[in-house]
Image 1 (cartoon, rainbow, N blue to C red):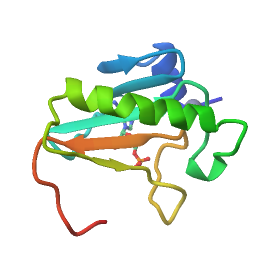
Image 2 (cartoon, protein in one colour):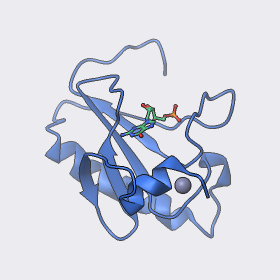
Image 3 (cartoon, helix red, strand yellow):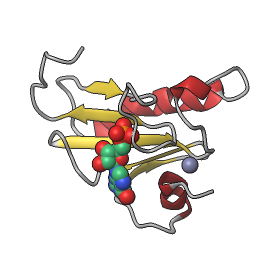
Image 4 (cartoon, protein in one colour):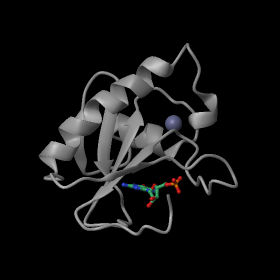
Length: 112
Ligand code: 5GP
Ligand code: ZN
């Protein structure tokens, strides 16, 4: 499968890793939108939030269990934002489920 995030997880494309365990990989976004912009992905390919079901929701739980640890290691003591874009209207560009962790400054109130 020609998935850029699967290639990053396998190490075929380099990335700046910030966290990893058996289910989760997290790395810095190549085009950061905030002082801290980390992408958190399941190591197993899931296309988007729209493909989450009972068979794979353990991966989502693992991601959300990792988030406080990543936020702490990134120094986000004053809060942060988690976003997942889904499908065309959600402007999802990479079709491998990922959560954006954004912080390090006061974020815009305009979007949610
Ligand atoms: P989306 O728009 O699908 O929610 O977010 C995809 C994100 O992946 C974008 O913020 C984009 O900057 C990031 N991205 C795309 N290709 C790469 C890459 O090769 N390496 C890294 N680190 N980030 C990438
Ligand atoms: Zn993938």
